[in-house]
Image 1 (cartoon, rainbow, N blue to C red):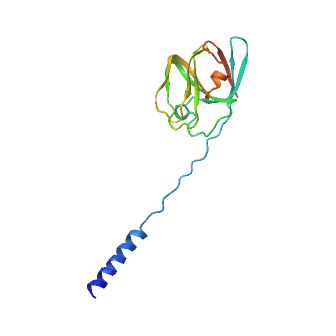
Image 2: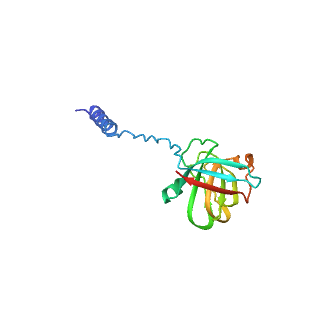
Image 3: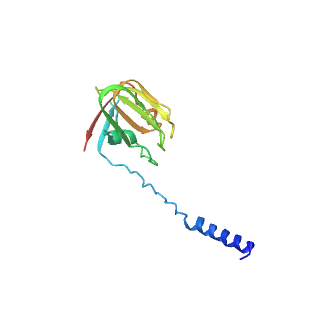
Length: 160
């Protein structure tokens, strides 16, 4: 065997080894997370106007950690209510959250105590309640202003 043919065989062998051992890339398709109505929430404004929402409830650690992540959209009549066991300052972020949100912080007497309006998608900066809260209600951005929701308004909710 000549040196030229030896290198040709060696080259072809190496090409076969590296191309045949290639593993196909696995494509993981994420299924879309959809809304599941678990209750209803009403905001009672000081002037007696009612604002009603269908809600999903986040009360387990997993539900609280994921919240509205990976959602492509949310109807303006829907929101997510986070329920905690105690009153304390709350802090949220928008990691993996595709939609802009208004966050409404609510105390243990069901009174709105603070807001974080227009939380930007994917922003990992801390969004703090600034005062203790027991509940956090997330709705589409702009709805706090559109519905003229104010600090001091109260809420009630019921689960299905």
